Every structure is written in structure tokens, then in C-alpha cells.
Image (cartoon, rainbow, N blue to C red; front, side, top):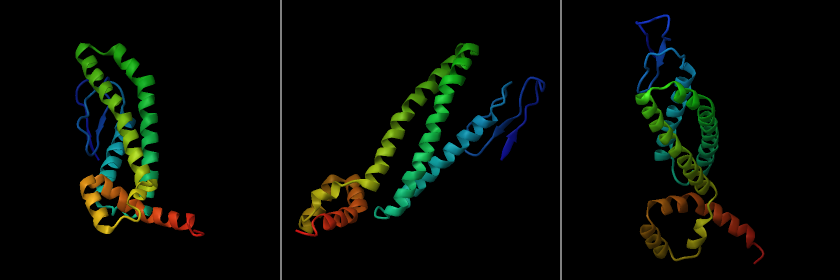
Length: 179
């Protein structure tokens, strides 16, 4: 961890931390250390999710389920963090901010408004990868037809099919064992 020390108005300014992947640590009278720590954890997890998603085989359902559980923890903490900011921090900051600071806060609030839909979309993606039943469409199709279907459908469908087909086949085998 590197820290940025304030040098002017030492009695009014609080030492601010500058953590990895953090864009700024401006001087100020408010100790925002915990805010920086929380945002560091969010950035850390987002990097981990991106790296893990890029290298995890589509059919490694155990890892995808673990990633899904980690995502649930991450998104729940992020949601509570943003709810706290919305309820306690933003109103106070808007009351004490000048016009330029208010414009920055408005931009940050607009950015926050985009996050919940993204969190929901990612959660749905994890749900599909871990529980999807889309492979039923390809069940008992000739292999050349499946190959063409998946080529036409694109990468998302191929990933879903690879990640869920064996589970669907086991389910189908159990469901039709007396047929």
C-alpha cells in the first residue's frame, strides 16, 4: 500500500490512502479510508471475476457454481454499500458541495445508477451458466446440425450449451429411465 500524506493545513486535512487501482486520493477534511478500502475490494473482485471467466472451461460446472456464489457475495455487499452511500453520503455531500463538486457528484450518481442493472445481468449470466436448460434444443439433433446451430448462434450459446449439456443429459436420463 502506498499512502499520500497531506502537507498543507495539517490540522484540517486527513491523511488519505492511495490503494492499488485507485485513481485518486485528494486531500480533504474527511477520513474516507474505509471508502477507499471498500472500493479497493470491489475493484479486486471485478478483476478476479474477469480473469476467472476468461480462463474457466465452460463445462467446469463446479468452478462456475463457486464463481456464482462469490458473485452473490460480491453483488450483495456492493448493493448494500451503494445503498448506504445513497442514503447517507450523497445527501450530505450535495448539501456542502459547490457547483463544480455538485457536477462531479451528479456524474458519480449517474454512474451508480448504471451499476445495478449490470449486476443483475451478470447474476443472470451466472445463473444461466450454472442452471440453464437451453441444451434441450439440441437434444438428439444430429451432430452436424448441432455444430451448425452453435456456429450460427455464436459464442454465448456455445458456452451455455457446453456448460449445461451434460447436466441436461443426466436430468433427461433420470426423467426418462422408465420410458
